[in-house]
Length: 95
Image 1 (cartoon, rainbow, N blue to C red):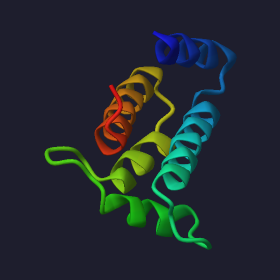
Image 2 (image 1 turned 90 degrees about the horizontal axis):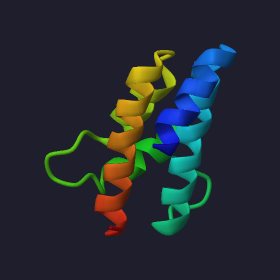
Image 3 (image 1 turned 180 degrees about the horizontal axis):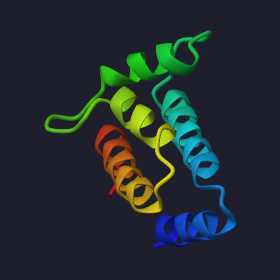
Image 4 (image 1 turned 120 degrees about the vertical axis):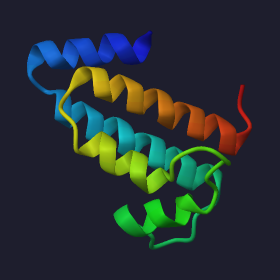
């Protein structure tokens, strides 16, 4: 619900794509810290490093990042945000 509400507020403010990229970077930073990513990895290199942890049956993290940062559609942001959340929970074994 929080993602949906945030996406709707951003859509109304005309800032969809900015919020999507910021959300995706936040998720990536959280994962990098939790999984103890090697220092010096940034952006694409970090996305590719995270790809190694992809749970079975899920898209690679780099694919989710690409989709999230490339959309300005609120509905797509919500769907990709849900996928990123499932990815994070699967990797970190959160419930």
